[in-house]
Length: 342
Ligand SMILES: [Zn+2]
Ligand SMILES: [Zn+2]
Image (cartoon, rainbow, N blue to C red; front, side):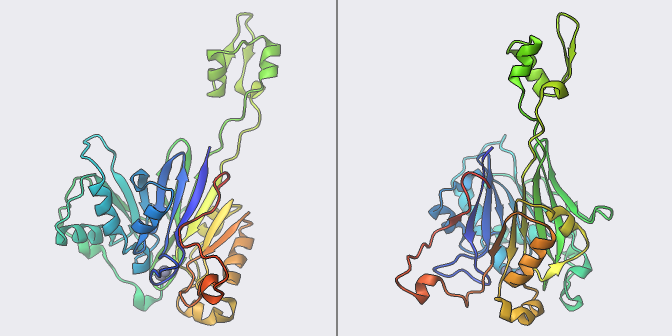
């Protein structure tokens, strides 16, 4: 089952000609999930091998402009490229409280009407996710509002037992959000595939006298079968070990985590994507601004025993290698992490 991650933007604060603002796409089985949508994300998408029309879910880590100012423009362009279809499922957008109002106001003020349905699900942050003076209570924004285009989406509160937010769950995977500490409330997302049944041991089946056919499917789907001779075969008799699911964790801006959920949910992740805005000599400044350094990111990755750490969200003060040394080839397009594995 294919899965890959494309970095559309790895810069902090604003997009530059050589580095886009925060955005990445996790593609699984052809379906694209967009994480953050900084300004210019739609042009980065056009330069990539991805099709924007394949985006079915969008996740916004926090409400700093470099993570979501690209959203109204992208939604309008998607609308221009889509044809009205009453049966089309809505694009689900997840983000902190206030995001729904931002999208709706942007559409209203620009007289934009999207031709596809969308639903905005808001995560309610807790006050300990940022310095006290920065916390704002946005719930008043949508008081008495009637939102257009039907479904309003959920307002998702922290699960006090799990210390996390359950956003998506289906037969194949589960996606939870967890709390981070930043200048304003920020979130991380853990996408975890559920284990898949192992392969059928065909030789064993033949030895038992089961011929290829519908019975194989039953066993694979977890059902026991009874042969003509009265022998019962359970799936566990002929299935190899379950294939473990993969886990990808994507963190928003942060200088730390809030509660124990981040550590638990990121434990042994295949890929952890963490910000590293400033270099290790600037740790004090990074913390002051609610950001991380490579060392802070790797300390967290180590404590979670993750398999691969990818750094992103670099300050624009760090120029690309080609600007420092013109002999280095400059690749200005989006960066694909891996086409085969993750
Ligand atoms: Zn940022
Ligand atoms: Zn930020």
